[in-house]
Image (cartoon, rainbow, N blue to C red; front, side, top):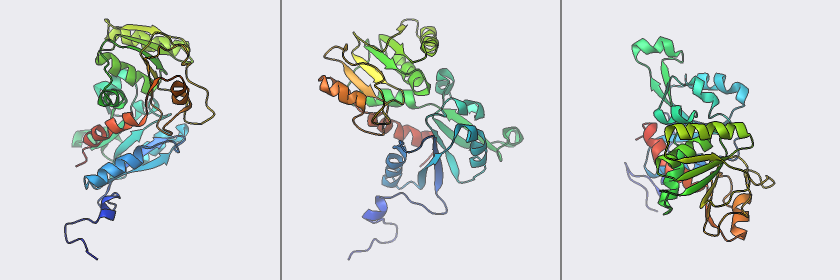
Length: 291
């Protein structure tokens, strides 16, 4: 048997995150929590880079969000939080500072705990911690598309969902040159608000409210939570899409969601939810200052 010498890590150690008294902890907040896949992927990245940090899933009910965040901000070994459904918009008011991306889309999916300066400690109220919120969803989703070789400039895009993830994805698509974005949401009013927002920021974009039956779009995206469960209804119909359309998911719980299965039966190209997460991991590491 060959033992790893001082300063070396065995293969088994490299496969698992380092956890000891110096570990930086990141909580991922969701309700429910069972669908999240970020902890596995992020912790594997930390282990591969020998970074002493770990993501821990935490199921937090909406009514408990404020008290839980306030308590976690008092844990000195916490580096921050990853935030997902249904907390991305609610956590905005709990942050002391927002990045441009978070302000623009009105949603946060990652929070960094910074030590407040002396003059800020009393104002922050969380043991001298300053909570900085950002949103990496949009650039993560676009990064996943680009990494798979899918062009965006001039593309006609259909987007189901106008919540936190949907807004982030819409803004990122527009910033990367999409020619048109049709937004569908079960609440038409919410879809209308996002469309008005896109028109304000990107006047050259053909932004419009769409229906549940898209046609003439070459990229169709689900940014809703439909697909987390096998009996979920489809977020939109795929029958009217052209044969060269790409159908993309933001859901990561299962590889082949009901939507992607329906698109596959039609012979349409598929883009899986895991690509969005993979593209976000490095950005999350950098934002949290983990090295």
